[in-house]
Amino acid sequence: MAQRGIYCRLQNFDQALINMIISASYKTDIPTFYGEWFMNRLHAGCCKMVNPYNQRVYRVPLDRPSVDGFVFWTKNIQPFLKHLPEIHQTGYPFVIQYTINDYPRALEQRVIDADRSVENLRHISATYGPKVSVWRYDTIILSSLTPVEFHLKNFARLAEKLAGATDEVVISFVHLYKKTLRNMDQAARISGFEWRDPTLAEKCDLAARLAEIAAKYRMQLTVCSQPEYLAQGAQEAHCVDIQRLAAVAGKPVRAALRGNRKGCGCFYSRDIGEYDTCPHGCVYCYAVRDHELAQARFRIHDPESEFLFPPPPGALDSDEPASKQLTLF
Image (tube, rainbow, N blue to C red; front, side, top):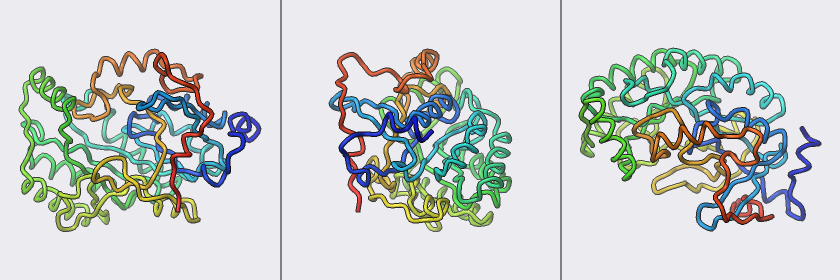
C-alpha cells in the first residue's frame, strides 16, 4: 500500500498541513454500498472530489501519514466488516457512527433488520473496543406509525440490546429542508400515514426521556446539530470527535472545532461522499433529494474510478489539495 500511495502523494506541499480526519460519509453510506471503491482508493493513496461551488477537482490524500483517522457513517456495516481488519492493521484509527432505528418500511425502505445491525455493532465492539462504535437513533420522526410511545419503547429495547457495546447514542429530529418535506409528504401519501413536526417543548421532553433511558444502559445521549433540544441529561454531539478518535488511536488527534452547518459540533474533517448516491430509501434523508436518482447513480458506480461519482461536465482539474482548506491549531 505504501508504494502505491506514493503515486497520489502531492508534490511541494508541507505534509504537516494535510493531516486530517476523513469522513466516509455523512452524504452517503460508503460502508454499505461503496466499500470496494473505498478500499481501492485507500490502496491508491487518494481519491478525487469536486468542489460544488467552483467545480474544481481536488485530490484528497488517503495515505497513512496524511490521515489522522476515519469516521464511517452507516446503517449496515456488514458488507464492510471484511475490510475493517486491513484498515485496522494498517494503523488507521476509525470510529463508526452506526444508525439503528428499526423503523417501519414506509420510512426506511431498504435498511437491514435491526437485530442484524445490533449483532454487527456488538461484534465491532468486541473486536476493536467499545469506543469505536457510536449508536445513532436518528432521524426521529413523529408520525402515526411512530408516535412518542413507539420511540420510548423502541429506543429502550435497542438500548438494552446495545448495552456495554457503546457509551454514546446520538439523536436528532428531522431537518425540514424542501427536499425532505417533499419526500416525507410523498411517502405519507403513498403509504397512508400522517406525520408532523413536533413543538420545541415536545422535542425537549422526548429528548429528556430518551436521555434517562440511555443513562440506565450506561450511555450518554447527545443531540446532533440541534442545540435547542439539549434537554436535561443530554449533551451536544461531536459526531466527528477528536477525543473519541484519540482514545481509539492511543495518541492525540488535532483538528479545529468547525461544524458542517449551523449548530454542528463536529471537528474539522474532509467528507469524501456524494449527495444523491445512497439507495437505502429513507424518506427523511437530507442527503437524497430523489431516491430513483440515487439508485440510478448507484447502478452506474465504478469502483475503479478515482471519483465516487463522475464529475459534471466542465469540472476543472486542480493540483491544489482539498486539505489546503484546513485550519489546524
